[in-house]
Length: 149
Image 1 (tube, one colour):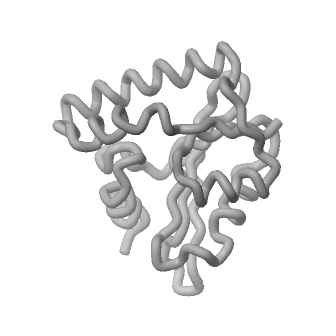
Image 2 (tube, rainbow, N blue to C red):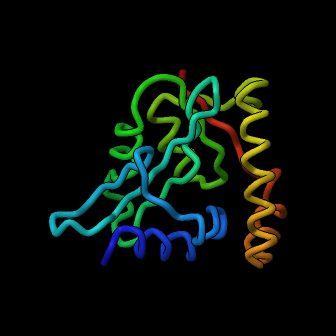
Image 3 (cartoon, rainbow, N blue to C red):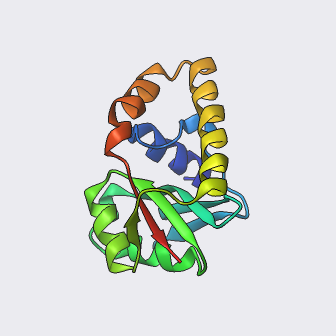
């Protein structure tokens, strides 16, 4: 199975993530593989002016509980990172990795995130991803910000 097919399947399963049509693998992507070179974990970082946002973070359900999240976070690098999530398991991993709960990543980063989210909302509307959009809007207050300096 190709990485992009796997990634689209993972995005399809999880409504908190971006639409599958926006799944991409590029220089900002981190992919972990099993011993047979099948993808089992994925993260992507986006430059948000004052740091990097980890804006997609996926571990294949068949491989959860094996430390894949910790390995992905290690590969995300050092420097200022931030993550918005409502997933309790990921929140626990972030706290163990030294991330702290915050209210805002700062003005410039927040502005960059706001613009990218507006573009994503527009994309979900034109690609008819109403179920995903409504899900994300419904749970918007439950997302928490974690940062690591």
